[in-house]
Length: 427
Ligand SMILES: *Cc1c(COP(=O)(O)O)cnc(C)c1O
Image (cartoon, rainbow, N blue to C red; front, top):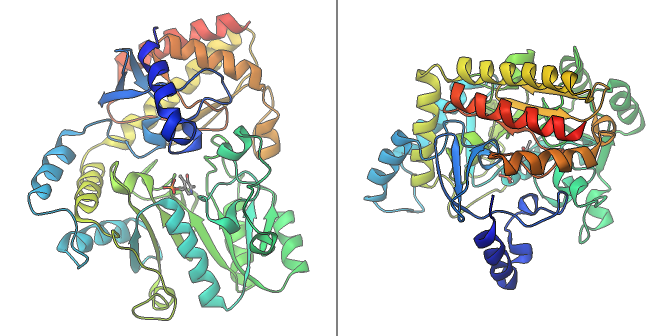
């Protein structure tokens, strides 16, 4: 592969952009070298500015579940553009997307659209505090919930990859109400609850995706639900990544739990900036204009973004997308394990729906410490071998790979070949 033009753009972009990226996870700090610049995408493929073609497993970090440049989304967005781009007043489309979302989640009578997952979570926390009249929040090490100040502690991929313990510029006071528990460790939650009496909410990624894909153990989520209810604490389930990932619904459905407040993002915007938070009636009543918890947005419920979201969700509902993506991930997982065994490489593969992460370790990965114990030097070599063989994954061992409905047998074969080659180069 030649990366000539990407290298030129990186130099050019570094002048007026920070690190030539608008989000740090796109930088190649962990794996070295400079990021590729993308020219276009279609279906399961990306083409970079040097004309290299890749099978894309980043999929914009999750939103592009129907692959790139989905025809139906494209057609509907083009039509919608004719009627202008933003009004600052309500449109029927917002109702349609709200109906689709509420139909897919338990305990969600009302939903508020925002512009990103970060905003959704930030608002959900404000809402939990408003509803309970309490201030503290329990979060889990390695879970990422966007970049709001109070949540930038022990926050997973982007921060681990940059080796930052948290972030500069976050006042101690702001995070003093954030209490950190360990994912899959219900005792660590109980301990925090017994030592604190001002807890408004527990926020969790039901399947962690920001320390790589890490599944909840047996009844971890059910237990969390129980403890939260018993102690008058709201359970905030952050489904920004897991929402509409393994079925037309969320991880709540897969694991038999119900959130008090659910956060969404990524898939629901079909590639446009949309986030959302929703809850049952009595909680959402707190939100302005019905209640006294203020939260607003000039572009919230943007008609173009709503159009893309509706088109996306309708297709997910009507077509047999999940059977296909989930099967693809199972095959990929089995192949990775077999090929690793053949080349005497230690790996553990975690999957949820259309998400998959191989960790270079012989041990199970059930929390942040175990994820961090995987071999990152091996990952770097693996990453570059895949890149050079036309497979694009996130430049961090702590991210999930995403699969779209456009990934099929041909892409699977290309991926198998590249993985086998990469593993053979590692052994
Ligand atoms: C991506 C993500 C966020 C943040 O969403 P943005 O749209 O990037 O602000 C929050 N929570 C989870 C679980 C995520 O995966």
